Amino acid sequence: MKGGTAHPTCAFHSRISVLTSLVITNDPVCNSLSVKGCFQPQERCLQNPLENLELTYGYLLEEDMKCLSQYPSLGYLKHLNLSYVLLFRISLESLGALLEKIAASLETLVLEGCQIHYSQLSAILPGLSHCSQLTTFYFGRNCMSMDALKDLLRHTSGLSKLSLETYPAPEESLNSLVSVDWEIFTPLWAELMCTLREVRQPKRIFTGPTPCPSCGSSPSEELELHLCW
Image (cartoon, rainbow, N blue to C red; front, side, top):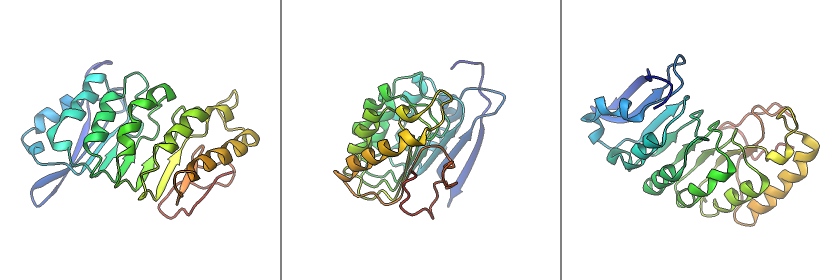
């Protein structure tokens, strides 16, 4: 772990005296999370399978991600939220292994704002493609090229239960201020939608910045099929 000692705030929600949810939010004073440091004091409780795991903000080291992929109690996760945990510095092979491990149970996957780059994507695609129970997938605010997004969408062909999904605008549509150029974005997104419809029919899908500067919409459970162009 870099950047000193983490000071996470842990919230535990029990159901009939059995721990099913673990939420770890990074202290804003610190810039890193230690998975081992958060889990070890709770090892006795964590013998029970977790259904929900949220690690938000900060960044993880490779050893932390490896710890996640190997922890026995995480084998039946239904909801995994790593929003705004910066992952661009590390290999995502361990995250891919975790997705493979929980593919039969995972319903919600949030990788929003993790700053994942397209060069890392191949490590998680096989695991993602096997998550047949996935209903919600947040992947906005990551750095993806058109080719990477096409590859990602093709790997969701077997995810027939997806009802809400978000993606970043392709990097080719961003201007020098890292804002979306909507004239460039519109035909690119149409092309991405064609790619997606070759493998499955989307239900509710959202791309680009949040909220959309064109119409003001944000992804939500009430959002109908919304192609923001």
